[in-house]
Amino acid sequence: MLSYCQAIEPWFPVISISRLRSRLPLTWNEAPLDFALLCLCILLLKATPPSSPGEDNDTSEFKSMYLYIKSSLASAEGLGINSFMIVQSRILVTLFEVGHGFYPAAYISIGATIRAADALEIRPWADASPSPSPNEEEKREETILIWCGIIILDR
Image (cartoon, rainbow, N blue to C red; front, side, top):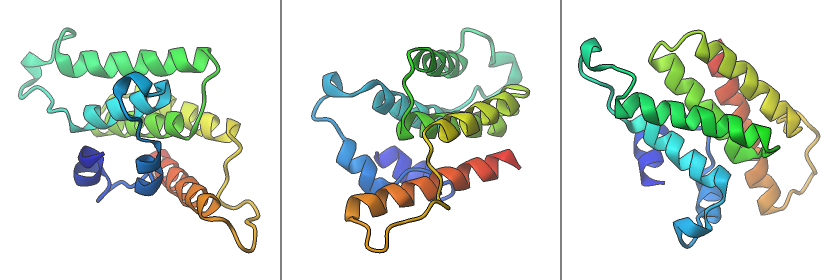
């Protein structure tokens, strides 16, 4: 969580810190798949790319982590797993692809991200209750952050 707060959140906030804190498992053995994938995506964005193009081979740790996360997201999709954290993971992977010039992967990923968010039926423009509970307010904040990230990446 500290990695996200220091390296990503200041310039691309797509995760509600309070909701992330509330989801922290006591141990990694108790971490659900979507939480673990989100953490891996944060680490991916913090990873240092090879210093020269000659070092960028298919066996590099940098590329291996990226491919592992992409295949894990595809596996989660195949298992029918979709959640706020899966959508956030997809956003972070798309940001990684855009930032490193991985095209057409980034173009394909943003489409999958939009469809995953749509499948959750989360929309910030949906009618909100006049006096939402704190949990509903956090969920609404996270929904807004997710859609802001999607809109930025889709440009």
